[in-house]
Length: 257
Image (tube, rainbow, N blue to C red):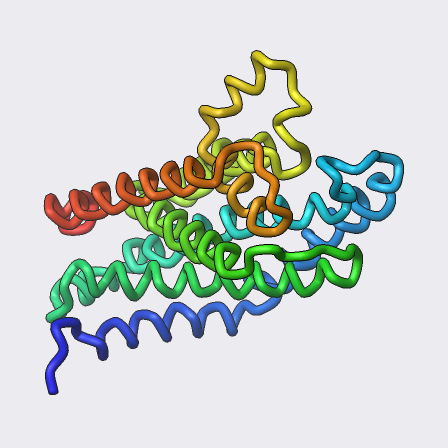
């Protein structure tokens, strides 16, 4: 029986990228979990006790979806960008491009591995958070859906970044100067309803707001933005990333020259 997709090729790229995670287990998994745990200790336990509940949810529990989403965002971009940049840097990308592998299969292998790492990290942070705060998940199916959608979308964005970057410095510019500030200002640590009216409107231009809001809704049934709009905005960003990846392979941008 034949498949329209070269599963052997996808599996080879996917497992190779996952193997790199196990070789750098502390950097890839342990370090993000430990750093996020510090947020729970400082903000959730130490400082959180001085805050009143946010929309009827204790501040420590309120932090959980935001911190998980922030970690998933940053790790998705980092994993995917590094995953495609290294073959370009070492020159092995030409072996992939010359192999009987389609563009879709190549992206599926690299992005699938990066998204899998991010989802594993998200689950581990959720389990770790249980050690510090009590939280509930009212809509577990939607929680998984938002986790998968966010991991895939930002892994695609990271793939684009890894193709665009032509040096290690460029590879770090967008995550440090764009992704991290957007994550911090996207409602990870607070509800945007706490902001003055003008800043509430300005914040709505931050795409991370819709991700955090939708993900938090799956936990507590409350959101800064209607969940339908959150899904629509995430789907729009996913479509833009897919279009950009299609154009990269269509033109060979920084891959074939």
